[in-house]
Length: 81
Image 1 (cartoon, rainbow, N blue to C red):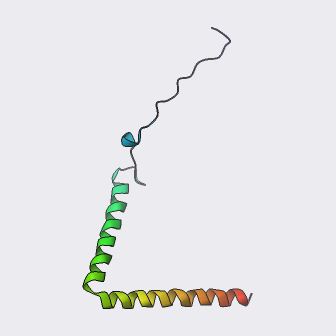
Image 2 (image 1 turned 180 degrees about the horizontal axis):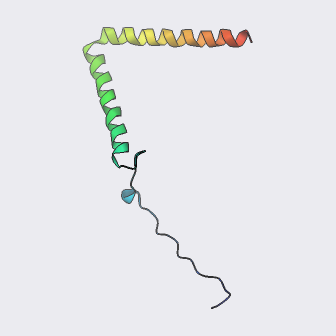
Image 3 (image 1 turned 90 degrees about the horizontal axis):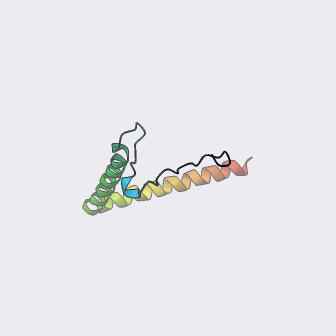
């Protein structure tokens, strides 16, 4: 042996097309399920906006006003500290 050092062989790199994305439980379906739910939710929102534009606008309006009210409440709380 020369110098007492052993040569180490690096592990081969993992190519992106060979990588396995696993879910929280170790199954491969975890990532696909998230994508499927996201796409389904997006399709539902677009369908709802197209078929019920007045109700979609009312819901958006109410969500916005609720968000503004929460922000004002937090600001009032911080001012009183």
